[in-house]
Image (cartoon, rainbow, N blue to C red; front, side, top):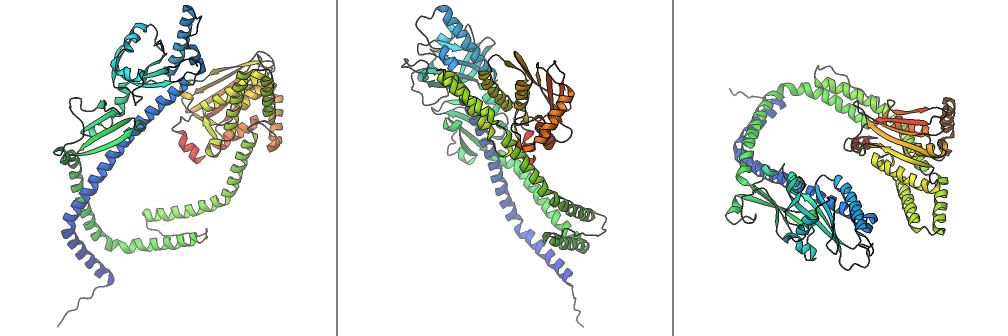
Length: 581
C-alpha cells in the first residue's frame, strides 16, 4: 500500500522555500562574504573620498572668501586714494593717511577671525597695515625669501609657503594670500601695488581635524610643490606610494582652491579591513538568523496579514481612481489597525486639502503679486530720476554715480523672484534701507539721519523682504519735519523671538489717527502703491501665524515707534521656513 502525501499550495511553498534557502546559504555563503566585503570596501573608500572632497571644498571656500575680501579692498576708492604718495604731502599728512588706512584694514580683519594681518605694499615698498608701529619689522618682512618671487612677479600662485609672522601677542605660523593689482588712483605708477593677507595656519589645520584619523597621511601642497600641511609631521619624502607601498595603501587626490593647491591622502588597507571585517561577519549572522526566523514565522501569520493588506490595497486603488470617500475597517489590535485608521484619516485630510488647496494657492499668488507690484513707489522712481538729472546738470558726477548705483540696487532687490521675493536676511534689509536713505538724503539734505543698533550676530537672521523700508518711508514723509532722527534697532529674546523697532522723533499721532490710517490702507487694497503698515502686519501673520505681528506706540508730539515681532531664525534654521513657506 503506497501512501501518497498530498501537500496544499502553502505546504509546497514552505517546503520548497526551506530547501532552496538551505542549499543557497551553503553554496553562496562564501560568494556572499567575498562580494559584500568588496562592496563595503568600495563604500568605505567612497566615504573617505567624500570626506576628502568635502575638505577640498572647505579649502576652496576659504580661498574664495579671501579672494572676495581682497577684491573688496582692491576696489575701495577710499583706501587706494589714501595710500598714493603725492608730491607736497607733509609727514603729518602721510601719518594721518596711514592711520586712516590702518583703521580701514582693521575693519576688514575684524570681519574674518582667520586673518592675522592685512597689508598693502606700495611700489616704493611703503607698507600700510592693520597694525601700527611695525615699520622696522615690515622692512625685514619684505626681505624674507618667501616673498621675493611675489614682489618680482615670478610666482604662479597667489599663496605662499608657511612662514612666521611676529606681532604683539607673539609669533604665529601663517600662509600669505598675495595679489598684485593696478591702483587706478595712482595712474602714474608703473609697478603694481601688492595686497597681502596673512592667514593663520591654525585655521587651515582646523579643516583637517575631522579627517586626520581616517587617513594614514594627508598632505596639502601648492603649485610649486611646497608642503602647506602634512598630518604626519615626522614623515620625509612625497606622499606618492612606492611599488611596495601600493599594496598597503589606497592613494586619493583632489584639487583645492581652484587648482592652486593639491590635496593628497593615503588610506590604509589594513586599517580599512580591520574596521569592516567584524561588521561583515555580524551582518552575515544577522541575515542567516533573519531568514530562519522568517521561515518559521511567515506561514502562521501570512494569512492574518494578507487579509487586511488586501482590503487596504483595494481601498487605495479606489482612492487613486478619485473616490475620496473610500474607507477601511478591520480590528487586528496591532499596527495594521493603526495603519487602517491612519489611511482613513489621510483620505479625510486629503479631501479637505483638495478643497482648500486651490483657495490657498490663489491667496498665495495674490499676496506675492501684491508684494511685487507694491515694492517700488512710482513717485519715488520719478523723484529719484529727477534728482539724478539735477546732479548731472550740476556737474556732480560722483554724486550721480553714487545715487544711480543705490537706485539700481533697489530695483534689483525689487525684482527678486521665488522664495527670495518673500524672505531676505536682516543684513540685506539693512542694506536696502541704507540705499533708500542715501537717495532721500540727496533729495532732503539735513532733514534726517538714521541711527542703527543691530548686533552683528542678528544680521544673518531671516526676515520678511521690504519690511523695514516702508516704516522708514512713513517716518520720513509722515512723521519728521526737520532734524529728524530715525532709530532702527533689533534684539532677540530667550523665547526665540526677534524684535525689530523703528522709532522717530517726529510729530507722532493720536490713536484715532492711527486706526483711521490702518483702515484706509486696508480699504485701498491692491490699488494703493507702496507697502502700507497693514500690508506688513498681514504678511507677518500669513508667513508666521497669529502669534507674531506689529505694534505701534505713538503720541502726538512725541514721535512714533513701530515694533515688529518675528520668530528668531538664524540663517541655517531659516532654510526649512523658506522651503515650506
